[in-house]
Image 1 (cartoon, rainbow, N blue to C red):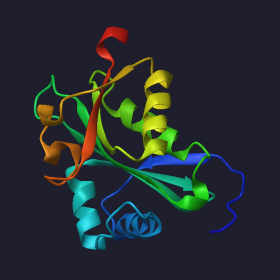
Image 2: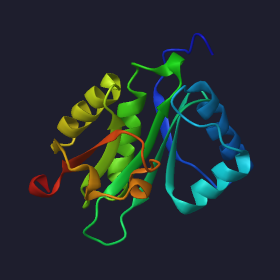
Image 3: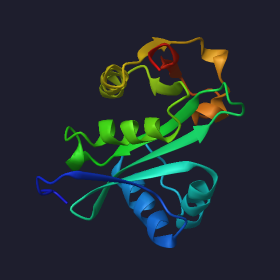
Length: 167
């Protein structure tokens, strides 16, 4: 995987199959900031949420897990974006976020990043600009940690991308 060919990124919705569960596990293993889950857990995650997979030349290189809010006025929650190191800085993260935004375009978008994850914060800012949204930091308690995909006590900074004024 050291040298991926310079091909286009393909984004697709994950399917409830062992193969996609394995692909998620492979991506998780390649990303230092994610937990490695079992294939069964990953398949159950696909059943519960909107999960996107990114591929380059038929090789899995990224994933994005998105949850819908509980009400129609709630945002969608981008709970995880993970891209393997050999595919970073090739537009994979932005492509995953853009596809996630297209899932429910009428909703705002909420996400959380660690304070020291400068690359993720830059990506989120570029993403917000690319969809004509306005990204703002929001109070820590505005959303439940579960909705943001973080464990209670983790020190993430929540963000909201307002798309309503641009719709």
